[in-house]
Image 1 (spheres, rainbow, N blue to C red):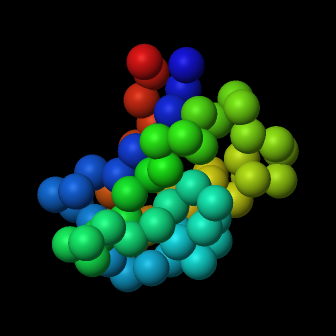
Image 2: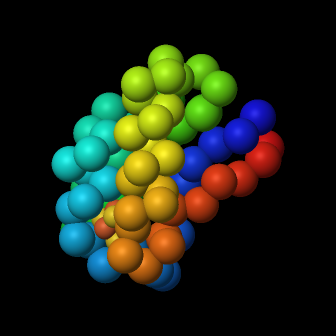
Image 3: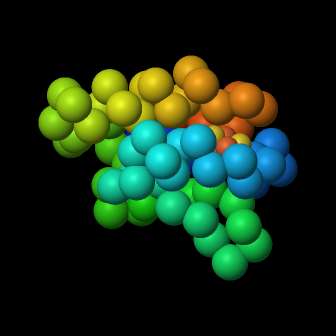
Length: 70
Ligand code: SF4
């Protein structure tokens, strides 16, 4: 399954992804973005949300959002 996650070492907490796809990305207590463990599987998202997540991935200024296969 293809999932998204946020590399905590790369995120600068700019808030772009949480603004674009708040169903998937939210801030943790450290002020960095995290992908929601219950809603991070790309193939289980509807197309609109999936496109937003891909936009967030491509738009992240530090390339902190990664796709992983698990
Ligand atoms: S867009 Fe990238 S740097 Fe900005 S909060 Fe999201 S993961 Fe972090």
